[in-house]
Length: 284
View 1: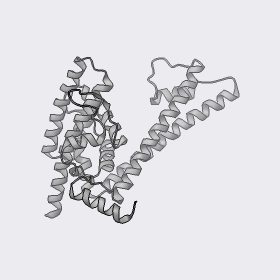
View 2 (view 1 turned 90 degrees about the vertical axis):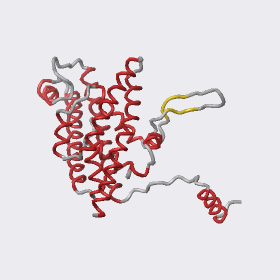
View 3 (view 1 turned 135 degrees about the vertical axis):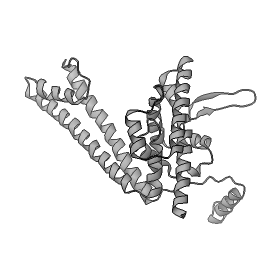
View 4 (view 1 turned 120 degrees about the vertical axis):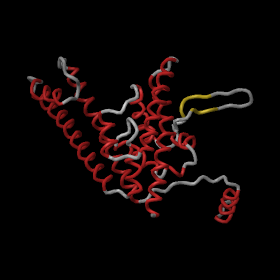
């Protein structure tokens, strides 16, 4: 027998026992930013497909440039000015593939400008956390916006370990008695956050330093000293972790997954502190 009354009683008992997990419902601002960030992600996937089509078409016909890196401006200019076919059908095919690559590149550029504008017009709560996360190496504005729009308030997670479990970057386990059996990552939770974390983790294979884009971000955004300290600690720890796992013979995909999981702990620390400071500013 299933009735509303029985369901309500069951929910009440579970609530009393503390067995219900709170669910974050995004507000309109988070939802709008999330859709925009996901639109850019979809455009990047379309760009990869378009480039594969054009690249494999040129490869089938033996057209390879010498001394040019693929998909740079010079590479595209070489295709447009030097690649020619005698058959009109092949010329039409090439023109279509090149046009699609250019079209997707224009889409991505337009969406990135829209993300910049959306972040500037976002509420102080969202903008503060996005700016604070950019103190981390490998976490630029798009990555920070993805994390904030997908996760919302990171203070709702009681600890970094809870956030790591939510992201699906922890190892699955099937243990009983004296037997302990662990496997690959669970891949539960939000796949968009998991993707940007693994992408950001690749930056920690390099020695710790604050130069280039990272230095400009930290200066232009006027980040707090606390965020910079956490970011520097993250560089030192995660680079050491990367080298240790590499010395153990782990492959690079396993290494960056482990580094991405630990990076999430530093993201939690910076975001929670930024949210706390913003609440104090609002109260004042």
